[in-house]
Image 1 (tube, rainbow, N blue to C red):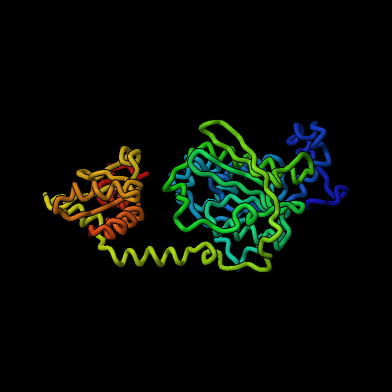
Image 2 (image 1 turned 180 degrees about the horizontal axis):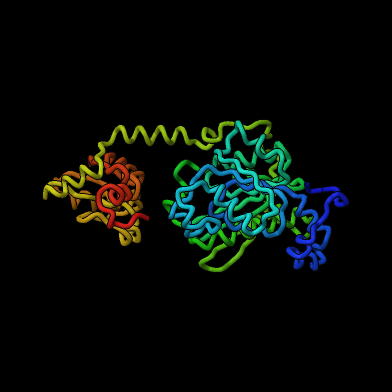
Length: 390
């Protein structure tokens, strides 16, 4: 509760010892620690952002924490999702997170929602909590969380990360702006690469997640100036912070109900277009590619459209690198025509998406080709495990 009956909240002997460094802060003190104990916070996601903020919220003494996630721990998560450990690989993230939270604070109530947040369940899941912290990594869920918080009048502590940059703010707090004031319309599907495609400095979500945790605690104890109305931008490479002002848009659409957010973000259309392109392109499996290579056939060119630094990590023998951006800007099309010299074209990338896009562009230029399903990751899993999977 953001305005609890403090007379009804008692700290135990262990509380006094555990939170002694809080209690001697005038801005926190006994009242603030009681507020933390009475507060409930829902965290959407236990990934890069959710990991540090959950650890610090539990350590700070938040009395009730809810966690929404349906994913399992993967080895590639461990570079940044510090709440999880190697022994939890392949197991549910929310169970891993609860286990770690109780190692830090066994008195924290942890509610688990092992489900995908949707328009059907969001209001019911969010309603019991005082504050929502958005640790998600996709636009449909961000709009969903925002709209549900607006409908339920809940503060929404926001953060996002990409490569070496992050941002954080507080939405829907004391009449302040919400997510739709920052992003009235979602970007076109595929315009913003995921961390799996674009990468992320493992330390970066720690910084942004801690800022989110700090803002959450400030809202609970009602101290300091929150980021409501301010978008904090962080560049890790330059070690610089910047601020942009945010204001509510007086002509923004009224949020009266939850909608189909994948439809709103153009996901079905993008998937349909992707399927259409796939239907128009021929494909081969990595096993078929292996047979072709083993046959010593000389009538094909294997094109790799990943970025140069990815090519350094792992490559299929005999492949030729021409990155997708070069094909998109036209310079790579001429290179492809030059190296083909009448041979058939086979293209791959990390997972198969970028190579399909490259082949669609090349097809418009009159160059037909075949896409390798699953890309080099499938090659690593199914053909040659000595090739690193990243």
